[in-house]
Image (spheres, one colour):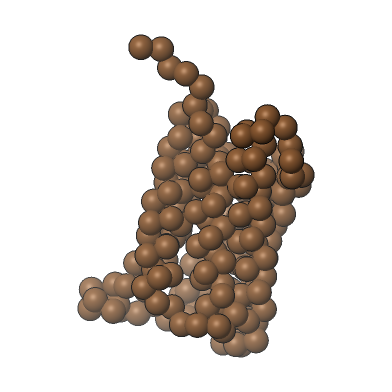
Amino acid sequence: MTEGKLANPAPLGLMGFGMTTVLLNIHNAGFFPITSMILAMGLCFGGLAQLIAGIMEFKKGNTFGFTAFVSYGCFWLSLVLLILLPKMGLAEETPHGFMACYLFMWGLFTLFMYVGTLKGGKGTQFIFLSLTILFFLLTARDITGNATIGIIAGWEGILCGFSAIYVAMAEVLHEQWGRKLLPY
């Protein structure tokens, strides 16, 4: 049995990231509380779908895609666990100052990943730059306790998430039509 062309896993990973990011940041912007809908998306689409996309990127030899999708898939899984474990009585709730450290580390990682996008498309650059800003805004929110910074972060996160959805759909349409229908 010969192996044919592998599907492009990036749209799956970007869509999992984008949709989950939009939903979480609608919460951060103050529109609704964290519910099972956000947690389920974090586990299944933000976490699991990105892990699958990352493993597929590994198979294609794409170190950047592998690192990005597996890392952010694990981010979503760990974030859901940070919320659920205390509710299940399995761990203490993480203080805001500690969450600031967690978010800062993700911001630092994302900043370095952003540098890796500078040789790529503008859409991917925008996703990673806006995600870097989002992580640092959330860090500032948790350090200061300033709710306004959290609302600003929410709106910025909505923009970040929708940019990932746009790039995912642009890539799907490009492959489906054999030409770029949307710039990315």
